[in-house]
Image 1 (cartoon, helix red, strand yellow):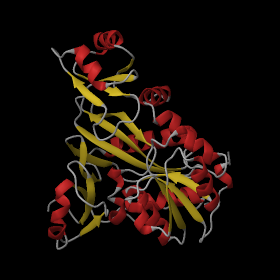
Image 2 (cartoon, helix red, strand yellow; image 1 turned 180 degrees about the vertical axis):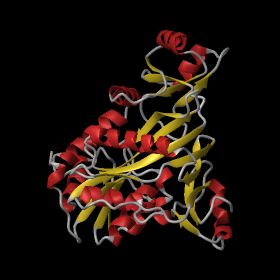
Image 3 (cartoon, helix red, strand yellow; image 1 turned 90 degrees about the vertical axis):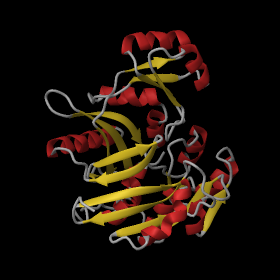
Length: 368
């Protein structure tokens, strides 16, 4: 395992990216602007990130020979998704620096381990309990109450691998439907709004946070992000402080997102951490056109051993709107909107629930 502090790329060096989706695509584009090359490793031959790099490896993550050849061709390795198989990360880590460190994945790939980690830092989360059977689920419900959300401990995103439980529901049936032996029950949080903080941390320990972002989900998929979130300055500072504390405790190198709930209570609003995403994040896409440095460039700078940028937001408010499924077919209507920039991911045929692109809008005021 190589010390991240020893990584110092120069223009012309190559970054290896695990995953070929839109995040990998945008990372490679950010690297190219800085004179750095990228090579993408993905098992999907239709990966949109392949379109923007000269060299790509299309192989399964279990293909050790392909992983070794990939590592030989690059100077540092990063990833665009958090569910990198542990065995693949281990093979690569023995040959090239993997940033963020693969040890981070052991915490963030498991919802229970992640909640325990955040709690140990003294940071608030929803009440939660480990669930391994119908009996333990009933015990957890008795302790936490309903409504509550039952989630698989691993491999869940965009609402997948989770189900809401309410009074009167068939507990045994719900447990069977989740098809897992490792789950976590979380108390339902009656939140006022959902926010996230995109934070970058360098190997030297420098932390830079973007403006706190308000997020609006539809059908469990992020639809709209707005920066800055309309919350008190003190609360925004607390949210940024929490993200920085998490990044530092993980000895993180790169960009991460911390998703949080804002709760209204008698003494004023407070925040609870919902999830950590150890990568660039959908709610940070507004930074591509709405900030002096994007989340993608920050990530590249961090893993390259370069100084981080000081993010400065353009305009009074920046909005990011995801184009989901067939909405991509209406992209032309956005092209003439003042202050709007269209990003199309090149994913081929649209499918319901699939993120096909996004639009950023930089405005001088909150009114359209």
